[in-house]
Amino acid sequence: MQRKRYYYLIEVQYLGFRYHGWQKQPKVKTVQGMINRTIAYVLGHHEFRTLGAGRTDAMVSANRTAFELFTCEPLEIDEFFQQLDLNLPSDIKALNIKEVDADFNVIHSPKQKEYLYLFSFGQKNHPFAAPYMVYMRDSLDIPLMQEGAKVFEGTHNFLQFCVKPSPDTELVRTVDRSEILPNDVYTASFFPEENYLFRVIGKGFLRYQIRLMMGALFALGRGVMTLENLKGSMTGEYWLPQNFIAPPSGLILQSVEYD
Image 1 (spheres, rainbow, N blue to C red):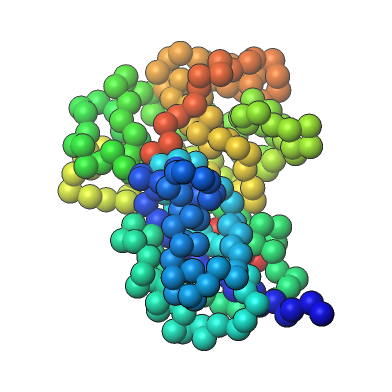
Image 2: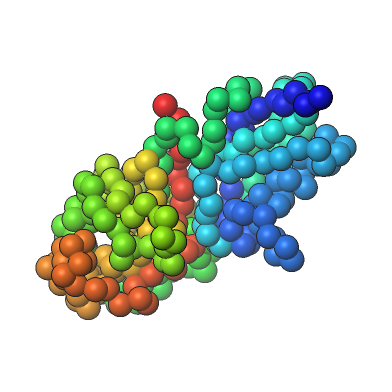
């Protein structure tokens, strides 16, 4: 006889600087691995499974993302949530929990993701900024990068903005919003006076897509490539060098919102 399963959607935030990405892997510290370890401690057993809303790369942070928890016994939700948040390490925080049904799927249910990438240039940053913001040594043409960011908006084939796609990978994706703005979302006394963010919003993204987009914009801002080159990369008329990928530490999964 099949055992009944219970389903919970849990929202979390984390600083990814000391983790080797979201997905549990042997012999390295990951966010999912740490969460699973904490859940096992709180429940007193390992008869559960977790599934993340998506995978973040090593050193990438998340302000608001989610994972689904599958159990064979119902939870005392308030007590479990309190103990989960209390026992998670200080760089992971549980934000919310709710019970869902078997029809909900944390990966395939309709949702929208927002990513931010924080960066600066000019005078070198305070070392404390390193987990949150990437420093570029070269001068950047911000107005040109702002124009370039708009090239990504709409529905395009993002073949050149994906690493090692499989034959089944859906390369056509829609970007609802793509812009570069002065950063007024995250502030700190040790951040440089002038710093910027790259905001991208859409329903789903390819592996390394945001970092490759940011890398292309850095190349544009440095004068390594032209705006016409960037436009050509969306049609296959121009092929980007494979080393155009931005460092991971400036990337933040800002939010995952479900319909």
